[in-house]
Length: 497
Image 1 (cartoon, one colour):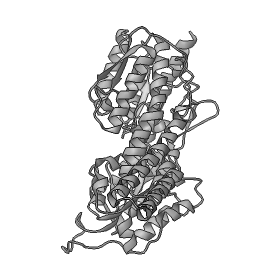
Image 2 (cartoon, helix red, strand yellow):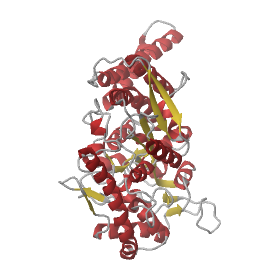
Image 3 (tube, one colour):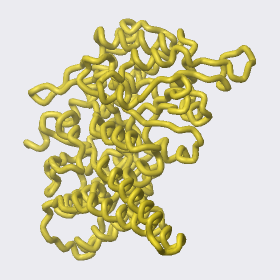
Image 4 (tube, helix red, strand yellow):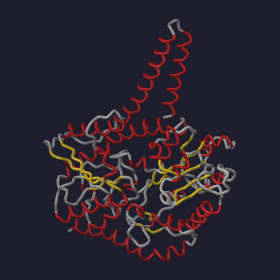
């Protein structure tokens, strides 16, 4: 992508040179320059898309004679899957064109049902399987809820579905590497939707404020491996200012860091290189949540949240977004989807960078994808597996080839960021995306909520007593996960029988 941007800049410079040297009228020169730049941009972007289009999905020619392919999703992901008409919006049109292309290719009718809230989707899946009804070919919904629904014994192993190839680039490697139990895959993460981009965590940096304090080039810190938690807190130290002059630390002041304790604090478990459950060679999982590293993370986060005047925190959704957009925060941890909420209209200059490392010895930056992103599943009552496999694989492949570039390269990259270096950072952030079996399948109905939410609960309780928190939750948590593993084992036993 850096090469693409450089070509665009070169085209613009050449266009400007031609405009200043020619004998044609200025108006004509300007038109020529605009046309040259536009044609260069189109050529470069087309070339990038063509590289994706050249990757085959390896699905043979198939004709399903007008059969329906039926998708059930939760309400917040409806627009990602089907679109009734072209709207002129690049993402909407990518969704629409994908639907038409796949429908015509396989002679199928793609039918989408909005299942309401994600909890309602879970009830629908349970009722469907218990009734023995074959009414859905694919379910695409909120992945933590989909993990909880594993206990209802509703899913079919994706390995039984033909044409699904998890080695292809439109499937996240975590599907096989981290989310498979004893070679059984119930939930998959692909490019059916762009939610696995929009829900990815990142750090937003107010460059305007950073320049005021002479903090230097934030991107160099990342590229040199020096973007760590200690560097972040060092930069935050001198930033606090009682901007409104009321003598009270409130949302109207300037801060080094802002964080929502309701929705983002949990991110740091994975940011600093930990997981809840670690895959073992035999296909099972080992609980690694409680250890010395976690204690250190909690103590650091507690200190930053409650002991430092440079931090503004509330147990309120999106408080960090509001603080950042108002220019009152040097750093705010958010998701990439925040860029599409109107950030490109902001006057302040900002950068997007990965979440910080624990220290310089950490092997890389880690990007956790929030639980509201979409997981895909096939129900046990589904019967036409050839149709399901072909269309599901094709929809994900088309999503990677066209929908993701529309969302990421156009909507997010060019409209949601301010410079070439942030674009390179976005590429790195998405390359570093991870999932965790304990987050995906750990639920929030077990005692105290699933382990994916415990860090937030501990910090909100204004405690650093991780040992007591673990002692309280360990038994119920292990019982809950035993039930999850049992659901997989029952499926395996049924398949063998």
